[in-house]
Length: 289
Image 1 (cartoon, rainbow, N blue to C red):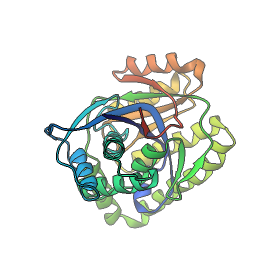
Image 2 (cartoon, helix red, strand yellow; image 1 turned 90 degrees about the horizontal axis):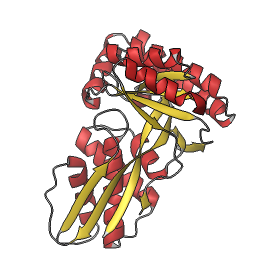
Image 3 (cartoon, helix red, strand yellow; image 1 turned 180 degrees about the horizontal axis):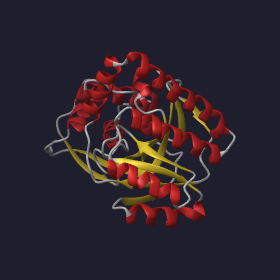
Image 4 (cartoon, helix red, strand yellow; image 1 turned 60 degrees about the vertical axis):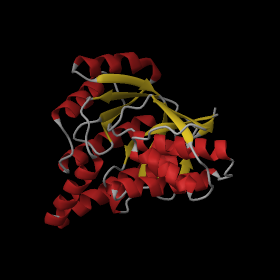
């Protein structure tokens, strides 16, 4: 039996604009999806991502049946890369159990293909970060310094469809290109500035960029009252910065926090109805356990 795990992710900055070629900064977080694979009795596969991963491996090596079990710390449909984590962990577990011999780079590439086929369109961000871990500047996939500070995630408990929300933003862009395209470019500039600040470990100013990014995401119409309440509660409680992570209109927000402020910020998020999750950046991508 092969047991493998892969991390979820957050965006420090760059959501939505990354779809239009602008850069973004994403971080692997210490919430993981574990997948066990064993040749033998065939299991019923209900996830299209797991089915897609099985199909990719079956194109490379012949096998009869596999049993697959999944356990995850990552809330589904919340903007934390749950689909990428289960895809990458499944691919890697199949790779190990069946002796396929794929590199991590090849696993990331196959994972991106699976997400694109399931969703219709997908950035390489989630699958690359889940495979490699760390703090990544995309689309160049440059690795930045890790974050020596805490992360508190606030989950609204409201699931959202990335595909639908990306489509709505695309319609807004098509209707008002002269207004929306400069917003995308400005979000990209936040990521470019953020690359330098992350490497300098200037978390105060990284947080300030996150706050600016939040305002720009709101202008694209991807906010919601529950997310806004948690963002402002986190800032008031001392977060360095707080914003939506992922597509928006539900899902999660993320706060960058000094370690000694994590409990205070988590309590503030919970006081306005959020589900607070303590975590931090992990340099560990997909692993064989």
